[in-house]
Image: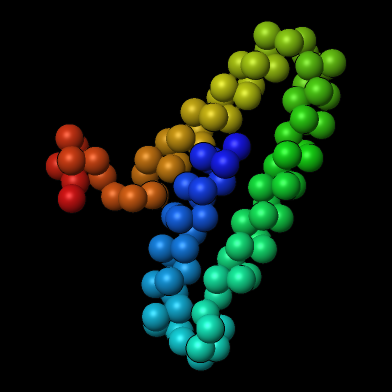
Length: 96
């Protein structure tokens, strides 16, 4: 769990830092890092609450194997979004 949350806060802070450089008056001189940490914790905790509820409902409705197929599809979709939008292209594919 700590490995996953550490990566999300680092990626988020890169985006927020760029936004803060271009809009320094919006968050003040201290920056948006407290808000970023709070929102990151809120979203992570929300996922820990909603995820088991949805997967439990899916298991009851369509069975354990099909529930795993749905969750695997969500993971594949999310990993495709991360590949496209986070961190640039890998060097193997001609990225930076």
